Length: 352
Ligand code: KG4
Ligand code: ZN
Image (tube, rainbow, N blue to C red; front, side, top):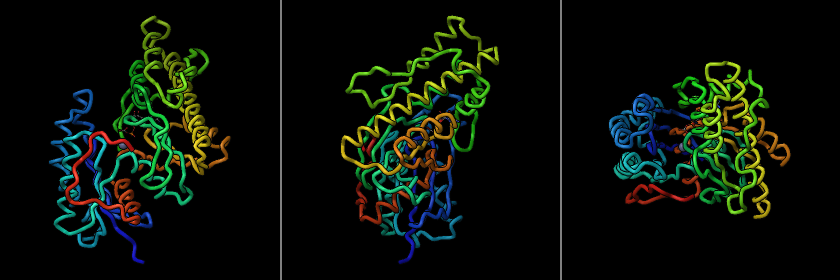
């Protein structure tokens, strides 16, 4: 059979992204218009501004994606768009565009759950990733473990009770006065923290691993605000100085160690829960900006090794929000006939 070709549109947060991928996992074209610079001056994402930028940028992003692919819209087999969760005004721009394109060209429409798309991404790149698998998403926006049973069938096992792990890296980096980088693959101060931590001694400032004695109801959840607060109090109490490179390195190493231990412990507990649910997990997928941290990776590799499963990380540019993951989720859903009518709305809060 001929390969399927799906256009994916993503506007759930602050990236305007479009891509066309095939059912064999080839990326025919991709466009991603970042808005980091727009929001940075405001110290965070401004929802109204984000929606305005989607409104301005999405038509040309789709146009340029089609041009790169050399296809016409009639050559597509479906149009996939992020339906939620996300910022309502941002979502509505993408959903409206996706529905209209699909309706006008009488193409199948696929409304995609943003987190499902993150989880399925690994299956495009690696044929080893079969269901059921465990997925750990660690980024600026997400910190959660989810069990992927099938396409369209997931259990969220744990998620953060406060800050995301990426936010924790960024806030601790700020306490250490480390620079923010505005990378193509997503911005943050995590990479600077990782770099300086290599020169550090993680034992000089012992940071408590979060939630080591948490109650059973919250056993699988994450918490990062305590670590961040601990580092702030240490600085306020004069226990270290951000002006000293050795102090910076030692605190960074201690934080990175505690954060990695926390992620690893919770992931190990998620494997245990899966066993209790009689689900035989075959693979650990780790995705999100923080997945590029080598200390985090090593800690999770350890968990995977103990569980005798392979660990797979999508390449960094596909770990962050992008159009490829939406198009690929569209392929996966289209193959199963999981289509949506042209009347769908966005869903701001959407449990998986
Ligand atoms: O997935 P991502 O690029 O985008 C969003 O969540 O929107 O994640 C960005 C987060 C930032 O907090 C950044 O500091 C963190 O991932 N990050 C890292 C590293 N690279 C990116 N954290 C620790 N170590 C890294 N090498
Ligand atoms: Zn995301």
